[in-house]
Length: 224
Image 1 (cartoon, one colour):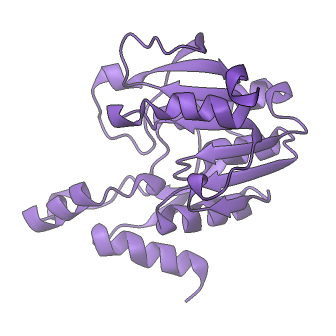
Image 2 (cartoon, rainbow, N blue to C red; image 1 turned 180 degrees about the vertical axis):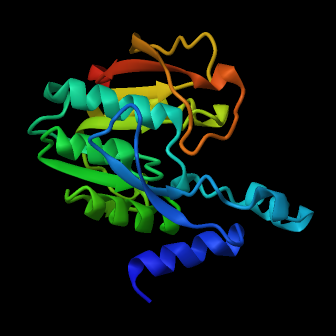
């Protein structure tokens, strides 16, 4: 079984009858990702299968709005990552990591606790003819990065304290988020607002299509 067949099999473990299909992103047509085919048989799922999907969301088979907006921003502002070391934290499909690589980053790490996301990232990097490094644990080393990318990680407010940690581990932190209202985290400033939907479309609430980008600067106290 090759890598693609392995990932396809993992998807079908949770969504019977589903397929992965290479899809071009509306906001970033320069990129393609292996994503869940929108024709998957939702109507055939029983309650047990639906519960399994909820318990183990396959984040990597979707391109979430925040990731798509971040990818577009990086492609439009390559100076943010060009020649720099970058890590995509909670990378999912690695859309932001791939955009950073396309924009000329010197090195890009796709980081995710989910081994399926790492496999998805590898296949998506291959699809887009870029090279990435891979990590399952951001906290396993103390490597300092030039840039940390954080897209759609703040759906769990328990992750908010990570934003201060990121400023200690990088010179620049780029955050894309649609969940946190009244975002007022010290060290971060708002730089852009844009509408985007998940691919394939999950018919999410309209409020989750409102994507905000924030830029964080290094916590200088951490380097004294």
